[in-house]
Amino acid sequence: MGRFGTCDGVSCCRCRHLVPRRFKVLRRIRTGVTGAFRVPNMRYWPFVLAGWALLTNGAVSESKADACRGHIPPTLGESLRRRFPEHHLPSTSDSLAEDVQFDKTRGGDGCLLVEVADFDGDGRQDLVVGLPSDKGGVPVVAVALARGRDWSISAIQSWVDVTERLYVRSAPAGTHSRTSALDRRLQPDERKSLKCDNAAVIVGATESTTIAYCYLNHRWLYVWVSD
Image 1 (cartoon, one colour):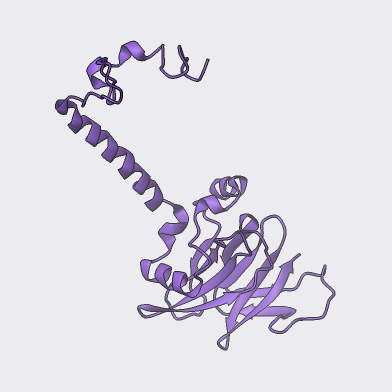
Image 2 (cartoon, one colour):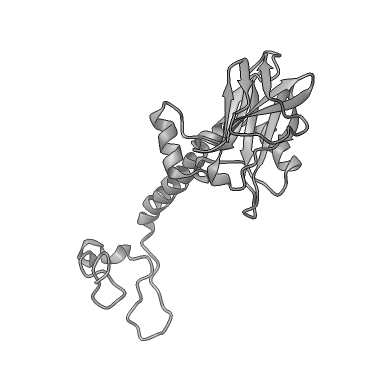
């Protein structure tokens, strides 16, 4: 027996008597002519169409309501698609469900791949966006600085190989220092300590790494805060 119960493997024996015979959209006519079907009564079509409209509108509303997509202005979305054609705009479903839920319990909206803050100190709202790969490859982290109606977009390293573990955040202006767990030589643009005059970009892997980026003298410098 299936989910609703079956009599002959096709029809639902429990609910058959609840459906008016005339409302069965493609009920076969017993005329002996193979392929003959009865057209549903036209007075029922407004109800059918109304139900279909509710279903499709609900799907569109759900897409529009995604927390991550709601943060990205349309002009930036188009710019990101052109700049990174093998990646797509993020949604909450790109992150692990438990990480999304944890963020919500801490007062967030469940989006781990978009953050809005003023990263360059010009008083405008900038964004950092984690872009999943279309082919399951390494995600891209893009920082978009607002420039009037346009955007100045830079890609920064996250050292995270899978989108499900990636997160982006911001931190208030302040000093960020390198974790003592690292003893390797500093890489170009890496610092032991950074004083950020504006909000810092924070990227990393959930429950693992944290890297702070500061925009100083038109360059993105970074510090490994945890590893």
